[in-house]
Image (tube, rainbow, N blue to C red; front, top):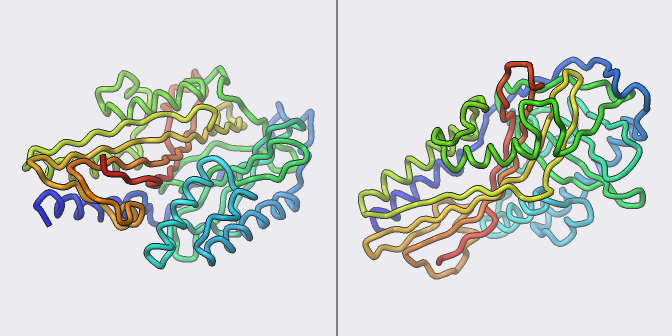
Length: 334
């Protein structure tokens, strides 16, 4: 193996560790009533939410045992479907499902909207896993009255993440939209500005609007580790981050802010330099690449799902990423 391949392979350990987020205790706030939602009562009860969530997890469990994504589309959609499909493809190649794919069946809190129309979303926060991995924030969407709820997105909450307050399920919360105003930034702008921040780092003109977070810290460390090895052989790397249009879910909180979950895809292109081959940088990438023939350049497509707390405009608070999920879905030599 060449020096650059060795260095990139070593960096794969960092990719595996990325977002390990041990024992994350995203703080689940004490619920309080929300006057804006009091005029309507939720159409879903806590018992119904438990049944919906259980049906989704039953499908996931069956797919995990079979290491096959064939039946996932019945209960998964959006980034959750893309991420779990990749996780199962990797599990089939390696023999084991990544522990980060675990979703506990018990929850700490659920946020049920008062909206009676469609599409609509339910946000549920799980407990920690048995091995003390972080709590998961699940977003479940229903597109129409006759369609099943589907798991649209899952993120692992960061350690110490401070979540906004929501009304108790019997009162219900107000589901937001991508163009909500009165905030530090509209949700749709938050997503595009954060993608720019991922792309440009401190050079982004939006850097001052966002609090520091584990997602960017880990990405920066990984990028620097790979860069150090590649520079010795005149290699290069680039990452581009692109919000996925329409792939965003918003729930308004009792304190005037929004909890926003969005999909941001990225492409990581690595050129080995000096006639060397660029190799997969982790077991996950290697499994996805399969028997592909390596060239000097490798491109890896990632699905990133990020949860943000967007505070009210006059609060003086910064926008904060409170959780994230990152998964390679395609590896190709170019």
